[in-house]
Length: 233
Length: 158
Image (cartoon, rainbow over all chains, first blue to last red; front, side):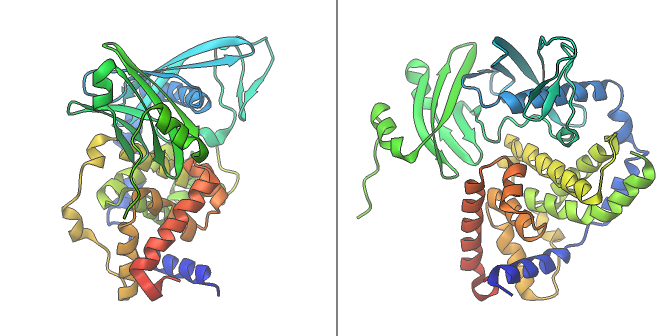
């Protein structure tokens, strides 16, 4: 048995010894008849359907440059506007943040896609058809809702300071924004270098983030006049 | 989904999903919430799964997303749990306890993929798809996690 196989075996044996908490099986079993089910029918399920449609859109369009975020005081990002050209037409999808009764946070947005009758339009394994109706064909999409944070960026205003959050990486851009409302720079998150540009006005914050190669890091440091750390003695 | 099929999948995968959630949340009470939300989504699902392994992967993916959703809240990022010490599991040998705590001390971004790799036996490619990361990023994180575990556990971790 190789070292990695031994590790796997040891890991499995260890975590198999972790018991499921008493009462959890009962709680999960009650879902079929419990309050949780009733709360998620009716309006909730309609919202969820739209949310899933929006999720697909966001998942598809999150790579677009230029994502605009509306700021509301010191809360999280409340709104996103996503743009994408499909069949030569630019579509704008506005997704708003909603808190559902069960505490789940979703972003809900709608956009009309003009397609010819009977024509299927496929993007990334998803079929969009019948004019303005989004039909999710791939069942594996179910259960995935808005995922704007992973692989993209959040702008967070908290305790009077403004940050870029990218996974576990936090970049404080408060001072940069105070000068002229614009912050530019680069950061590393999980071994990947990215450059960012943030513009803040009284009404909104716009942000663009792009991956850059390590080769271009010195160039952007010079361009944005960022300090280069001195080598350790 | 009918009740019988739901209950069958709960009996098959409750433990597995709880462990995924526990690794993602690092807190048993949050893990319980994640498990419940995950199984609510299962109950609401209309389409049947073609096979059990598909159901397992679907449940894990939902649980991972639920954990990520939890970590996105500022409250969760800034909160530590003092009551957790009372609810820690007891292991048969001290080495297992050491591994458990070494894993729990890993950063969240390493912890969950370590569990998916070593416990659920997902491939790097599958983890990359699940976590929406590049395969290189997954390999890098797994490598760093292995190094950290090796430093903490010495001979126990190869």
